[in-house]
Amino acid sequence: MGEHIGFVSTRFAGTDGVTLESAKWARVFYEDQQHLNFWYAGRMDRDPEESFCVPEAYFGHPEVEWINSQVWGTTTRNPAVTRRIWDLALYLKYTLYEFINHYDISLLILENVVSIPMHIPLGVAVTELLSETRMPAIGHHHDFYWERTRFLVNSVNDYLEMSFPPREVDLQHAVINQSAQEELSWRKGVPSTLVPNVFDFENPAPGLDEYSSDIRAEIGLGPDDVMILQPTRVVPRKGIEHAIQLVKMLGDPKYKLVISHEAGDEGFEYRSMLNETAHREGVDLRFIETRIGDKRKIDRRGKKIYTLWDLYPHADLVTYTSLYEGFGNALLEAFYFKKPVFVNRYSIFVRDIEPKGFRAPIMEGYVTHKAVQEVRRILEDSEYRQEMVDYNYNLAAKFYSFSVLRRKLYSLIANIIGTRSPA
Image 1: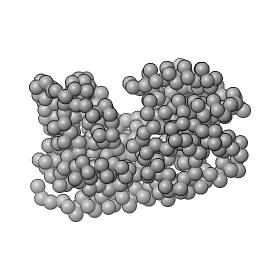
Image 2: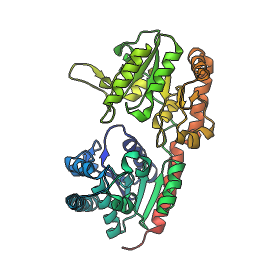
Image 3: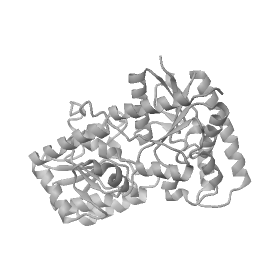
């Protein structure tokens, strides 16, 4: 049997990128290399037999939220805040020791926990643990603090320099895009491996079944309606107003814009703005987050709850109008489900994805009549659409499949084992 691998994060639950990609890493570790996987986080939906849940490790814990309220947007830190950071870090470090000892962990995978400072005490705890144990580890970095404007003004530069990420000799770094790779090298002076997000392109996406066959009727769409799916959370950086503009310019009431996810803490005002914009522009906009969940089930009203993957087969077009993304999981999902996708040329798409040669109608900051004409052709010409989605699927299989992930992880594990030294 292989290594006992410990995944560490603030949360392994739901459909966020960290949760989804960590599960893919774990699958490859187990299926290909027979490594056993165990999970440490503050919120968890993994197998309880393989999980070590510490509520204080969750970024939404009241103590963590209080600390965050004191350190962002100000350049002065009260000594009481420092004391509470260290007290919580010390407690979390001991729980990490318990996790390692309980499951006999020999390698840690740090899932964004020393990348973006949503939980400063946990980042500090992990850094100290690595210094004290020389535990081999891989930092899987999805976002960095310098990529988010809300972290630019702060009173914790000492912790950011120390732990986000730390410079440890036994810590290998994995990033998800080229820009992050360059910035990490420049800011921290450490090398990293580029490991893109992936999908199981070796196996076709699931299609319709009896459970999911009635989604269109359940959300009020008629047989002649065209579903344009925005498969993202409702937050400003998703640029959903551009999807509304696209539907307006298509100029036909049969086109319906469906948004799958909830608003969340930063998006309620934005959602209201989208509703007002759609009403003003005469666009049929539908929020269906109450019908979409992590798992299929029946809710208290007796209504079916579907998954996002139940929804994709019903979509006629996917809109991905983001202003910024660390990578773009929903874009890969569209390719995986063989759906045409309308894309705003966000920076990571321009640099990492577009050069591969994917075919998609695009916008660059605003919707043009040329892009609308291309979308209309895709929706109305089934042969043209099928040729496009088949091409994109095959290309994505080449660059973003599990086989790519396997090669990258083999290399990282070899580096870890090769650099392992006695404590």
